Length: 203
Image (cartoon, rainbow, N blue to C red; front, side):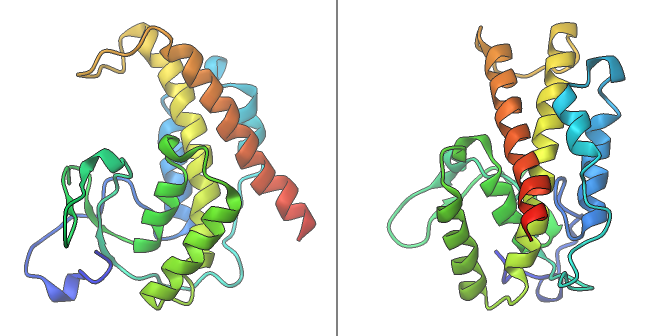
């Protein structure tokens, strides 16, 4: 999809619903979630993360980023495996964006919580090489912790809204959804803090 760019198509597309092409866009997505969580229901880990969010991009972050078609849906159940070219379905949130964000989005998806950091490092490097994109790894590493914080805020928002009937879904949630959401929020929070604070301090 990274080869499908605005200059190669006649179709008019909007920006992808959930994407990032720079630090500010990532921070704005987090802010959108925060505005829907009353301060009284904001978990301590979220407050701890917010004061450690970056205020400027890395010095090697490019001034402009590529724009290509982004699917913005890391759920592998929407990929049909078949001989030859695989098929991708459910393009509800798709649009233009930085294709490197697609990797950060996949890395942060709850379905892949058990994938090791070493494996993700390999994925980032392989993507950069296959795409011929020299700054891809830098951009992915910038978006990734932002997405982790976004997930912390998203789980916190769900824990506030769902009991109040404010976050309706077509599919019924399992009985243990709240416990699972709290566990995932804690996991995301710890990983985000490790990357934003502890790893940064080592550099």
